[in-house]
Image (cartoon, rainbow, N blue to C red; front, side, top):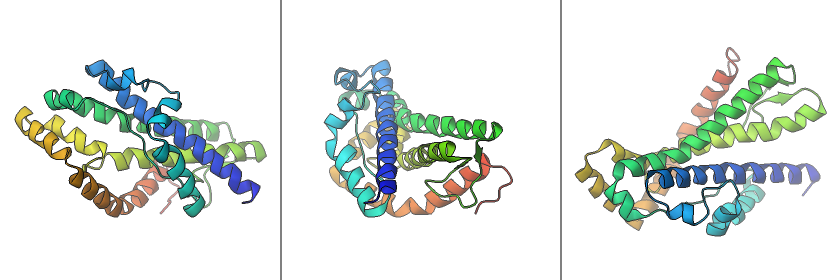
Length: 233
């Protein structure tokens, strides 16, 4: 593996760990404030990645590294523990807890987008000729060129994490947000359904099939919002 690939892989890993940690810390913080301290007691209301890695080492370390080695991009997962009885009893609170993870990713999309726009105003970033997942912006000169890659990955990865987790399919966050719009009785029945392992497996398979039809147009839309008039397609 050449030095450029090693640096890119390390960049991916740092951004992935940070983004995933913030996502799970968002869940944990919201749950704690809304009455379930399970994740708080496990040390997951924290930007320290270690409690999150310790809970899901396979999803946060092994799978991301393997997926980068095979495909040149990283995928993986993490989780924050919660009390299912609390979620069953307070479905609307549980829905807010579920929404906090994708909200954290959206915040990182906005922060990285604002940083890119600020760099453009300062004359150190410019729209790339060909935009892709790892080239959302182009740096002017070697130093800013090096800064463009992590900022691009931060923008693109968090856009994907935000949208993918909002799909209303178990075990994704979107399925846990839905009960917030239901009556208490219907929400309780829906929660019981979500706890069935078979539905989680089917939901993941469906999400994996559906998301490619969403991710491309979403990335193009985000690029054209970031660079009005650029005409990316």
